[in-house]
Image (cartoon, rainbow over all chains, first blue to last red; front, side):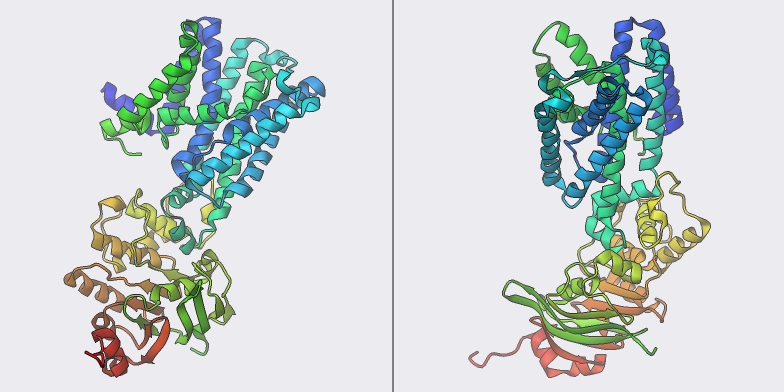
Length: 314
Length: 252
């Protein structure tokens, strides 16, 4: 009974979203404000991980550039509110637009390659963003970064902001779920399986990959804008390679191609970061160990392994 | 049919110094069934790749239904009504038969860009899918994953996917490759039962299989045109027999 209830929750998006809404919705009532802010971070990074999972799990392209796309949105939001004195809401829109535009530029270069070349190209593009943020001191503040101007009054309260994040992330989870299960989403899986067959069926595969990459950039940009409001500070570490790698690891640990696994992966890594680091500065070692164990015991990720174990269909 | 369906004019496909296809010209009339035969390495698949746009020819012109398509990419030719199968099975292995058919069906239409729509087929689309599956004798296998199909069934799915977009030119690249005699027989039956207004070019290694399926045969050897004619002419042609059976060398 319990089993079938969980099975249903993970197969149908609405019941899964309801499950998430209940768990994350009740959390602030049960835990401390510090722990609520950790949950808030988990939600933001789950969205970043999902944006990576759309490409990795459905189109078969592993991106190491989405951390930079995410961070560009964060930079734009904070620059707009702090240095231009603009409205944070407009800032969010500008941040998401900048991330989407950056993704479109990345996409133009990356659509014609796949496999390890795609990985390396997106890695290089992400490094360029990081280099620019580090060196263009007059705009980005260089290594010192930029401090934000605080959140608008409505969401100044951490609990109010937490619920806004929850609503936004749940909304985009639904959108992404629809996206990968749409006719367009099916074409991405087709490109992953056989690009030559797709072309001979009449698909312009480069166009499809361009659109997919750009749209996932929008999703990463939404996460980046939320992160700007959450963190109220941005520096080159927000756009660095580690950010992309972390997003990818979250998707992998949760289960590539499962979408909802991103929540599990984000929770695992951020909890580790926040709680293990209280005991040892060597927490990345624990992260490495966790990653190795995932690869050995559940190469399809936590949710992928659960699916296999229970015999659920995708 | 006033206009020929497919015209190849002096097609050359070169890989460096090697001319895999060397100065081939041929004309396929609308509704004609043409076989391209020849031993391994004769250039059959390379010629096919030039026709379908996988690898554009080094020189020469290709005209499809009166429009030049020489430099057009594969997806544009597919949308113009060319459809092909692959010699080495080229399906979407992680998906079900239905999903494969869906991708095949929507490639030439506009629905493929729908990002928030449902993947459920309309009843008209559903009818087209089931009729293509019927034609290929795969009627009841829609929900099965492709990697669980037998090899023979995968070859049938290749055919069904090529048929579902209602092409006007069907290019079959060794549809019976690797099949048992009984399965080859079924493939021949499937081809025979296809609509007669459909123009077809069929590559085959095995002469026996094609001779009673087609109107006209082109025989290639070493990238060059060896002979062209009716199935009877070709099967009685001394040059073709030499190529297929091996010619006694003078010093032997």
